[in-house]
Image (cartoon, rainbow over all chains, first blue to last red; front, side, top):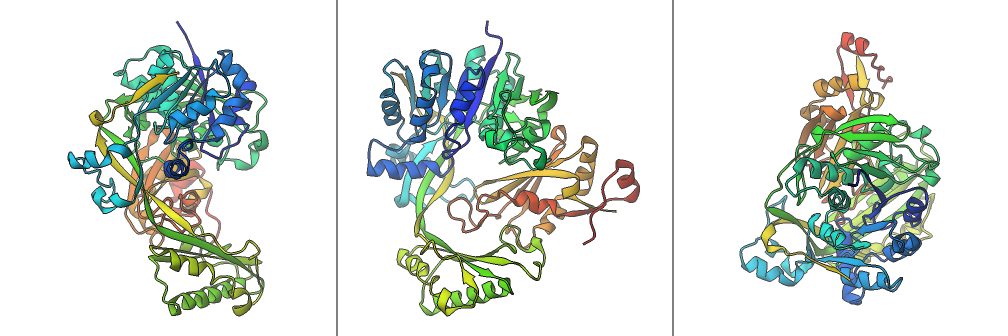
Length: 447
Length: 119
């Protein structure tokens, strides 16, 4: 019987360090490489790409990541579990297939609810917004994508059928880690404490190096060699406890503090961390430093899951643009404030309509607002940052042409406009909802 | 005695829709009761008045020497809608650490709490 399994977290989002997967595979032994590519907004970006080209719609970085560790995967030393499939897991698998004919690729589908969305609504699934309670009909004609967050079961099935690489669409981030651990030890679907432990392991490593020294506030000046930061590894054992660590001779740090900061990241009610497979109770987690860069995690309790799945729906929600100018000493903040007034008066006189115009003074108060207190009287420079949002593209477009004239028409000592006009972006907003589990049918193919 | 959260705790924040969460972690296990006993939901709501538009929720995690706060209406709609520099609530963490508690002198002395710097 297998007595331990090692899962490395090699990608915290689409855009993370390109060489992290190969460093995890080459830096020491791991059994599984877990790669998390999907954030809330990523699915809608991928949906737009798929509309332009039916062979796209997945995280293309993944192909390079697989290529960078191909030898170890073909040899059977390392298996990969990734939600890189986005809205097109089969196209992702086809692209991976081109790298090597011998790979056994597991493809998990069934999370995509877009084709049956109207049917579901007609059957009485309101897909009401989880926070506001509004029915989906409010935005139905603007919906771009709709995906259920699916759990560990189909990933386990693919692994049990011998896949070297498992590609999913919108599976939960944590299932990507829990599934290989649970499958290795044969944990039952009602072994809630152990499944919850797998979920906590997944939560800790799903943001890559953010648990191993990256973005860590505690004692941040002393964290070594972030240029070669060690990505995290979970060493799990059958009783449900595990150790968080990283490869030797890498930078960063794994301590009770770095792990705790990641545990509280994006936390809601800590008693109920809800996933499709189990509800984990984060108030039961015990952490213990058992060696340098080794934190033992134990004691985790879980409870049965609900009969619902979360659904991530993306819809078109108007347009926005953000522009900046930099004002220099002396009286930099006053100049930026006057420039903002001039700009707003121009927008008014032009009769432009926006849902929101937001001004921030970077260097004085942009991130902490009134909590920042009175700014120093003699700031070296202040960046004026103005954003607008509205339904009318033409109005947002016109705003982007009103910023540059301030350089010649507004207050003095202004610079920092070399980047040109701000870009108009279409807003793709996020609509979280719940749906009955029994209407979501996942499928697994191993090809 | 005045005690600034920055000097006794660390924090990380993130987002869920238009809500920011701040996980606040005591720097020492024996300092956790200071956070638990003196940092009420009302105190945090007052601190963020004018910065957020919704209510505050508070959760205790004594196992991690931590409190978790949910700050609703913090992100100008959140995600892609938000026009804010900090659209994902990444630095509400240090915004909370600006808060100064009033801790009874004997308690502060017994626990070796560092006094807040003069305003």
